[in-house]
Amino acid sequence: MPHRRFWICIAAIAGLAVTMFVMMDGVLQGTEVCTQCGAQREILRLYNLTLTSNVQPTTLSETFARHHHLVGHRHAWLFAAGRGLPPFGPMCAIGQGRHLWTNINNPLVTRFFDQLITWTDPPTVDHYRNLALDPKTAMRFSSAIQTCDFLEAGFPDRRSFESWWTSHRPELDSSLTQ
Image 1 (tube, rainbow, N blue to C red):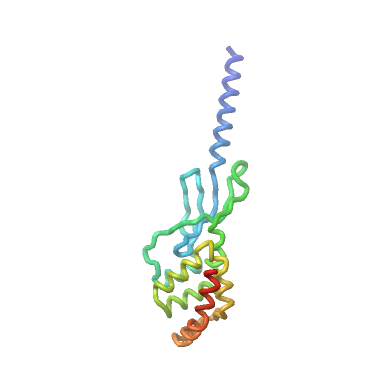
Image 2 (cartoon, rainbow, N blue to C red):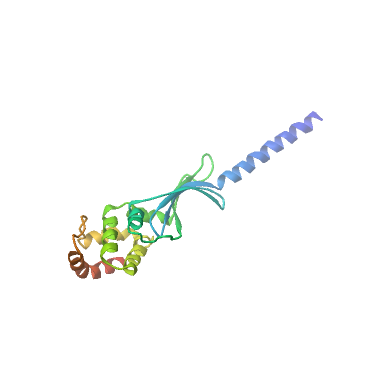
């Protein structure tokens, strides 16, 4: 009898260890970025269940909020980067959202959108917002603005902005749609 109990205990411990290993392999903590406004949030993902912290504003999402652009929008989260919880799970995990990090706290991109919202119309703002927060074009966005000689300080009036916009918009569009 005692010999049988020993093997039952060993089997139970082994079963528990396997269960923990399988469960821990599905645990991931990381950061996601909203493809609509550029906000970010920390996540803890247990298989298909995602537990999140509060949404953390970025300079870009704060600019949209300050101008009341995207009021009441639904966040569309894209995984950026993270890791599994030790000792199981991946050491490092990266996602397409990592490309958006180039823009969400970039002062030049933030000022560009501040000026765009101030001096243009919502469809124009949304067109460039979609390009800045699309993983396929996000990496080129800030350099395209720099190449077009956008002033980080911005433009003092509509006339100055429109002069720059008229002469540089084709170049900007060409850089972003290649």
